[in-house]
Image (cartoon, rainbow, N blue to C red):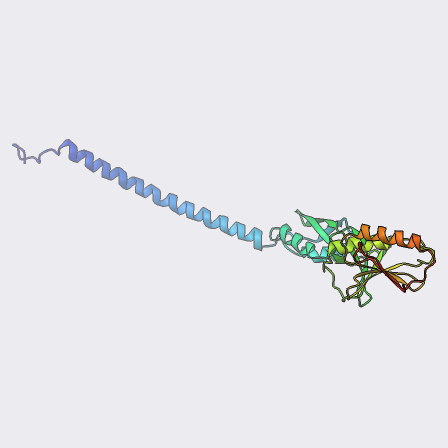
Length: 264
């Protein structure tokens, strides 16, 4: 107490302390509504996002397909898996993967657009010939040796190879070197090698004869594997040119360094 019975005045430091506590209390009171407001905004944002993704959002009603020749456009649209999907849920990358699973499709570009459309641009395989398996199924084959079917019967060159080794399936791959060599032989014209070398047909045999060029007159040329095919073809051309009238059952040039023929 002071000399006149009054309470002693607080020191400056204690006054400053009380004012600081009061300001801190007011700041805490202000921060509590701010936090509540932020939480409310977050909840509303999540709800809005959920409505956009899961609510009544546009669905893909049409898939436009370009670049389709081997694959029918309707088949490509179904294979993409996009029809009926919500625009914001559909994946262009997943659709591309599904389209690339089609044997005739090398690649695809997929675009999804609002309000409810999608565009698919196919890059199809380029056939270099026709490959007939042991079951008699005719496939188209590209330079990579991939077998595939086509919606267009005129989509490949009329170069045919009959593979007697096995039945095949779409997407199966044949050795590209074998495909190239076989189709090279399939390009030999009737009567090109000799007058009786008519109606040539290329066969891939199961045995060591390998690639065989058969003629309608009943004899054949055995080439073996696809290696050195041009050299083998040049050797047999020379032999047949020198023997234009010799009766033959076969000529064997599996080793171009040693030609074998029958009958001797």
